[in-house]
Image (cartoon, rainbow, N blue to C red; front, top):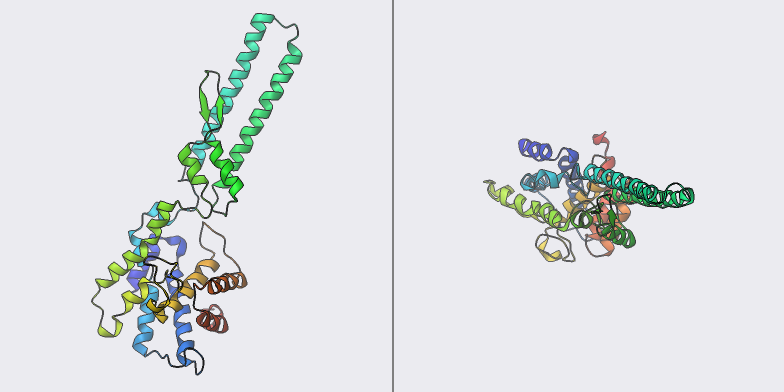
Length: 315
């Protein structure tokens, strides 16, 4: 078990400790549920073997990430590594082409008309060039900002897509664009750093997890480990993945793990693609998920009451 979790976390060092924390939180929640003497869970109790089953399923819930390509698994920005530098180099080439075109325009004027009357005309052209170069600089800043995995307003997304068709004509008469249509598509991702295709690859990790865990010859007491682990991204309202299961299909053990998993993902400080959020903000987000029917509200209430992230033995 220890070797398996080590393999998961060496595959994605940015989430180091996540599996252990999820297991810790989930077991603490399961203990509280087991001890409940009233309410929804008063009839639910877990034997020592079932507690171990919950712990193992929680520890291995992300094992399928070993089957996800590394560049997708640890992707911190929207563009692949080095792509933003390539765009900046492209911007420098455009800048030089514009400046050479501007210089040629002046040279041609002088050859045809001499210096008489050139000062005012050249001043006007200099101002036009400065405006175009300032526009180019703003576009480069917009591209760098769009590369961050934040929530992007629709108007900014549209302007980024427009950049792919915004052309600059250089001294050779060639039309150049700062970004390609494919780069614009990636930069216009409205939330996070993953394209829809990459997000599907990330989602596939739960299928890989189940397929891996099914191959382990579990004892009878631990036979539900694969089942518990496979559905930690399902939602009670049927809007989760990979199968779109609804509440009756999702074991209570998995419902507990889902709450722990989301909480730790929100509050972890070791993820390059997003900042950690404060505990209270994370609980607000979980509360919103409960109101949409995605999470088990009764379990969330117990989770908040137990506050497993503050347990003395975690110090």
